[in-house]
Amino acid sequence: MKKNKEVKIGKEEKQNSLALAPEISFRGRKFEGYIIRKFDNRITIEFERVKFVKKYERYAKFKTKIHARLLPQFKDAVKLGDYVQIAECRPLSKIMHHIFVKKIRDADVKQKIPEVKEENAK
Image (cartoon, rainbow, N blue to C red; front, side, top):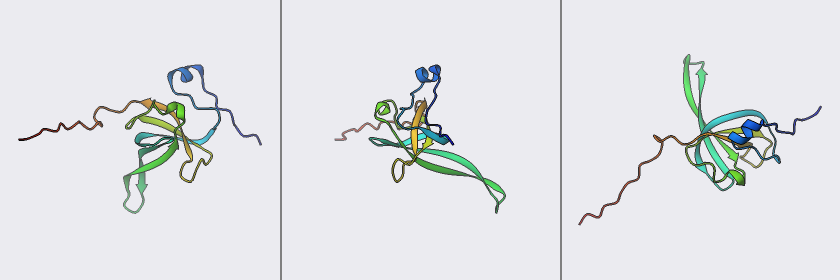
């Protein structure tokens, strides 16, 4: 049985979005969410999912946080609040099992916190 180790990305996708580095191949599921924390080599995304609760016969919203590897070439490309896509890959560390694939859109203006001006009252 052969494993799919190559990542095939079309020419248009490579030009329009950030392409994945060839050293780490991804497999399995892909997730999309907002960046809530950013570290040197890692980002944390959060997304909502709807799940049916059998006991109450209702749907409930749950938030999920996932840590993903951020390769050095994408460090300056993403910021807090950006909507990104990550993909599942081999375990990279104790908590990282996903890798950053591409940035879908910039942070919304609504999410940015307005700057508070300090005034000296005398």
